[in-house]
Image (cartoon, rainbow, N blue to C red; front, top):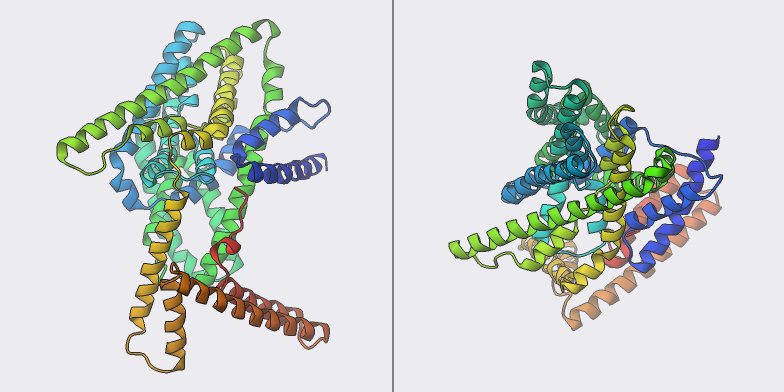
Length: 513
């Protein structure tokens, strides 16, 4: 019961902090990580440590699948060069730079220093998505940052595995080398094949709650299967999600199942993110307990140096690639070359997260200077999630990337195009039903003008009054025992959907960030 009680208390703390974060416009990962540290240093609080393997499967896999499903394959093809540079080149450059520092200043063997570099190199998908969801940034920058966080984990884990094998055994044998070479393409093939297989299995569970359960079971099983086969679980999950999204047909699939699935996934992934960031902060107790007091100052100094190296290296990479892209755009006569401000923003969005901490805790007990490596990993996570996360909004304001108004205008343009498409389908249709639909869609199309906006508001007021009358009648029937609970819930859901179709956007959303 102690674990269950501790979990409930943590969730209660998280709920309170989320409200604070929302009202202060602070990214919730930063707030929760700090809260985790505060909880850990309070005497008598429960000691909740992370099992690295469980943490990766439980927290990383669903977040990766959720982010990859929303990252279209066409976007990956369009931004293939920056994704290649940041997801692979950025990991390699950061790994080598940190490895050089660890070898020179911490006395680590070079293979062990490479392990440290691979641990702190990749920005985290959950951290990046959580922080970026709370701000408004240019679409191209947003796409590259989200895509980078999907693919760089695989590159970092491959380097981590290879360097750790060299450190432990002294060299890579033929079997290990072949396994590492096949890990990336094998993971992609496994993900694509799994998507095709499950595509046919879905038809048996479509429209059922079991279908929602299958979505989570398949995610964890795919991650575990990839690990057992010594393939890249990250690429398996990403390939599975992107393949599933690419071949899914919104026109043929069930709208009810899609709404249900999105609602379930958004809640589950959010809860897992909340727990992950809280637990990340709480690992400070275990880290400090393993440190020798005499070496604490020296280890902290080295950890701070690595934090600076990681941040500076990312800035150098972002600015260098940005300037090359700007030169290439001017050379080819392309409009709107990348601006220097975009490079600054991308450089400041290198949040590390659970993957960094979990791989650090996965190190064997006899790893050279293990305590220093774990402390350094925690320092990098803390500095990037807390310092960069808390200041990201102010950096965006300083760079004058205030895109909220622009996003609203773009959204209105998209809604107008959709309304026009709907009106075109009604051409030639006659009758009261067709005229009713045309009137509603015309209001949606012209909703930016003052006259039509007034008309739309009047329509919403009348519709909501009528819906309120329907709900009152339903409640009266329930009180009078004229219907059973199942019929009541069915009719209530129908009225709720009717209300949601009328409400304005700001009243339909459920947000915590």
